[in-house]
Amino acid sequence: MDRYRIIEVKQSVFADNDAEAASLRAELRAQGTCLINLMSSPGSGKTTTLLRLLPLLQRTLRVGVMEADIDSDVDADTVSRTGAKVIQLHTGGMCHLDAAMTREGLRQLGAQGLDLVILENVGNLVCPAEFDTGAHLDLMILSVPEGHDKPLKYPLIFQRCSAMIVNKTDVLPYFDFDLDKVTQFARQRNPGIQIFPISAKTGEGVEALAAWICAQIDKEKEKKETRL
Amino acid sequence: MHELGVVFHIADSLAKIAEENHVARISRVTLQLGEVSTVVPEYLTDVWNWNCKRTPLLTGCVLEIERIPAVTHCGACGQDYPTVPQGKRCPRCGSEDTWLIQGNEFIIKEIAVPDG
View (tube, helix red, strand yellow):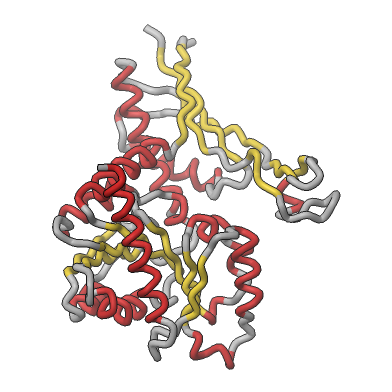
């Protein structure tokens, strides 16, 4: 019989990714680039929301976008029409981006000189929430047709995000979606979560969201200045 | 598909650990997996076996999974209770001021390597 020797490891599977994410976050802060990780399920309107949001953010900020999908470049093509610097990342079958893939994406994008990079993560409410990308701000979109019970079913993503954008409010009359209930369920998971009801189709609510994002970026910049 | 990414992460960590310990082969890996971590053990094992076939360090490496039960603590009445049947609301006092104290672990506990 073969003899074995045991080596004790006791290391979280996410430890390497967490360390990589922390160092990426610090480097970006030092170069003055804020990274936003935008998550949601497929079809919630991430790209349409970006199309509304980008012109408002571009009034004061130099913005880049990284579109992550398993395949295709339809989203990058659409977003590039806003004039923002865009690249498409292919995850090659993976359901999420990790910090190393995000770092490589930022390098390809050329994030130096940008005030803000928005990472549009792979459409999925489960896996992206597990992997820290190195972002300074995690945001998510929940759209009206998905239902107000999602914070109960997918708690982690709601715990992780600073804000929940409730998209497609223009179709509220046609769905049994309760805005009060979704607020209550999301705050059970994350008492501090900000909630922005918007319609990316009509533009309703997008100004308030853009103003909040700009305020968060200012806060990030202050953090950098206090550190120096 | 989540399991695929996770297996790549574990394999990367093991490659580093093997290098640090001057190990050329790993025979067994023991993971501790919490009951409410988002990983499904059966899928993880399937992807694991596939990845071992393409990784010399892990050829024939057995994956052993230790489950850790999920336990929630109630801040209002101080009771601990099993998370999966009860959920967020404390079964004793009804409070929702509760938090998970164990059960979301995903840890590489130890590895076994051929001796000598």
